[in-house]
Amino acid sequence: MHDLLPKAATLGAALIARNETLAVSESSSGGLVAAALLSVPGASAYFLGGAVVYTAAARATLLGIDETAMTGLRSASEGYARLLARTVRARHGATWGLAETGAAGPSGNRYGDAAGHTCLAVSGPVELFLTLETGSADRVANMRAFAGGLLDLLGEALADGR
Picture 1 (spheres, helix red, strand yellow):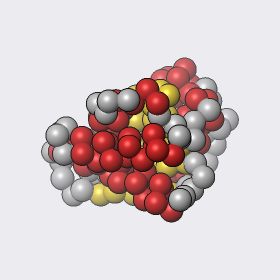
Picture 2 (cartoon, one colour):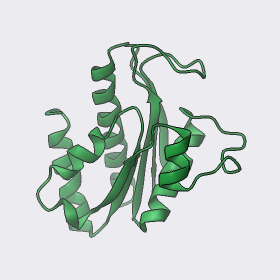
Picture 3 (cartoon, helix red, strand yellow):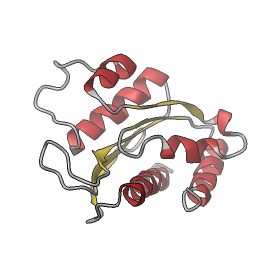
Picture 4 (cartoon, helix red, strand yellow):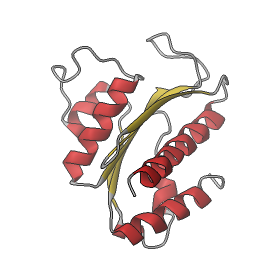
């Protein structure tokens, strides 16, 4: 987690300076993004909430995304990450919504994605999304890489949305 803290501190300072807020939806990063962002003193100025959306039941209960909204989508895809980011942003009334969905390992997921696969999305004044493949089956290392990737993507979005 120590590698995430400097990124979170930089992002937190930028969000505070911009008077912007965020909300987070994570799956295979297991809450590391939220933990890193909340480690910053003054995080209450920008962090509105977050959830670990690890199952379809959690998705429906925590974000209100039903099967109709999932038509044509599958978990661990860029389209699904965008839906999560947009939804968590809207539900919290945040400037930014962040989402991560993937397979940390040591094995892949039921959709055929290998361990080390995740899709990341940031929704706000700028929308960015990407697929990250670590090529590793190391669960903990992947969780850290996924969280770091999402923080980096937020940094790009903040730079693009000046």
